[in-house]
Structures are given as structure tokens and as C-alpha cells.
Image (cartoon, rainbow, N blue to C red):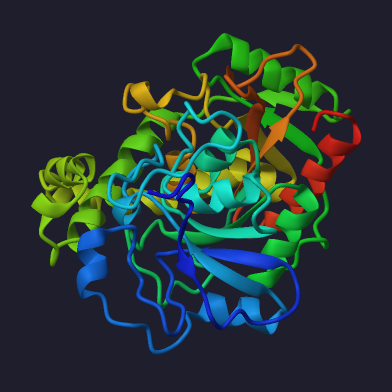
Length: 377
């Protein structure tokens, strides 16, 4: 087993001479097999005949694709653990989880192996590994990136986005995907809400106060949004994996699929049917883009590998997949000294996420640059 198995395999057709890029192995690259992190799927997957549209975009924009990255099997898990291909090693501390499902992409940028990692985010799969590995991750607006040529987990939630070690390179990754990162205007006001942990809430409020903008505490039922998002994700995950032999998968993934199989079609349709109303309410809550939500990415210490499955990691990420809105996670320096944990090799900085209205990626990048400028990042 490789010492740090963040990579599934190298890529021959590397594209341009710009930033080096690794692509999560859910996404087709011509001449390679898309494994979805699954040895079972790798054994039967055909060689892709053409690049996925997002890969074509990266190459056309000058990106230099060098490898496909490891992930949680079928992207159905947030811990970053993969028994079949090996678990990528957290660059901050090897005894901590790397986070998933885009573990390989986060680790690759965290160790400096590449400039940009491309991941997918269905319930937090970009933002959670970004938080665990101390890097930047952008969940894009649902529907803003073409998902053709990407192995699906839950199409109603799936998105593609970049990870990077710096905000500047994250913006460059977003540009490679076809986004326009530097035209956004930072929102006028900040909204904060309770995460369930007073220490993390206080840290977020300290960071918000440093920006010199109006800060307002709001109420938002994240638990209900999580439940609805989990219903949609579970039902669609079962459908996506229907042709595979679940007994040959990572037992944690297989067990999750079996549990999700209990979701009824009526529960699923009710969850989808409620979505538009919640989206409209959220947009009003953020004054149709004049405000932004600031909250932790993970409201507790990053778990050790031995405790990987003890807590739900996506409690503050999955709600925004259900809403379909963009969210940017990044490491910050809390004036009060709170971090997301510490391992043998050093500190895991506090990770926060900025959440905006649909199409608001550039405004999130703009505000994150202000947070950096005042010394919080």
C-alpha cells in the first residue's frame, strides 16, 4: 500500500501548461476507467471514450491534469476512509481522518502535490475534507456545473467544485471550471446562527465582528433541512448503486445503502416537493444576496481515525446541498484561539463556511478575501 494513497492513478493526456490539477475519480477522463473509489466498479468499468464536460473546460482553460484522486467508495461517506484503495493521509496529522468523500483531492492540495483538486459535494464532500485538511473548498450552486460523465451519488444534490491550499488558487480552480471568481461584490451584512456548540458560535461571532459589517443572529432549522437532504441523498444513492453487489463494497458503505433502502418513494417525493419553499425562504433570509451566512464547517474537533464514525460530520453542510446554494469553506485564525483540533503533527485550524444565495460564488470569494485581509486567515 502506498504511504499516502491520495491518488488512484496518473493521467496521460495532461492538457495545458497552467495550474496542475487532480480530478476526483468519479469524473470521466478519456483513456481511464472511472472507479468511483470502488475496486468492484474498477473491475467492470469500461475505459472512458471521452472527457467529461468539466474536464474539457479545465483543459480548454489551460489546466494541467496530472492524476485522478482517491475518495470514499461511491462517494457515500464523509470520513474519507477507503479500505479498498487505502485511506489518504491527513496532511495536518496522520492519526486524524482526512474527511470525505473528496479525500484524495483535499490531501493532494494539502501536501502540495498539485495546485487544484477537483471534487464533488453532495452532502459536504468538498467542505468536510477541506476542513479536516486545513485547505479551501468551494461547493458550487447546484446545476451550475455540468454533471455529465460523473458517476452519480444523488443527482438532485451532486455538485462539482475546486479545492486548493490558498484562496487565490481556489479562485483559479473555479475559473478552470468555467466560473468567474473575481467579479463578485462582498455582501453588505453577516448572518450567524447557533451551531449547537457555544465555543464555535462565539468564534464565528468574533470573526464576523472583525469585518465591520452589521451582524445579525438568525433562526434556521438546520435539523429539518438535514433530514430532508438525507432523505433525498439516501433514496437516490440506492438508485445509483442498484447494479452493484453491495456485499462487495466497504461494509460501512454497504450498510449505509441498506439503511437508505428503507426510505419510501413518498418520503422522497415529499422531500423534493418541499425544496422550493425552503429555497425561497432562505433567499429572503439573506435579503436576496445582500447578506451572507457565516458558520462553522464542522462544529467539533476533527475525529481521529479510530473514532471516525462516532459523530455525524455533515450536520452543517448537507442542509445547504438540499437548498442548492453555494458554500465556501476555509481555514481561519480565530482571535480567541479556537481550532478544529490538534494532532501529533500540529494544529488543524478552525474552518468556517460562507453560504450565499444561488449563483453567489464570486461574492463568497470576495468576502473571504476580506477575512484574509483583516488577519483572520
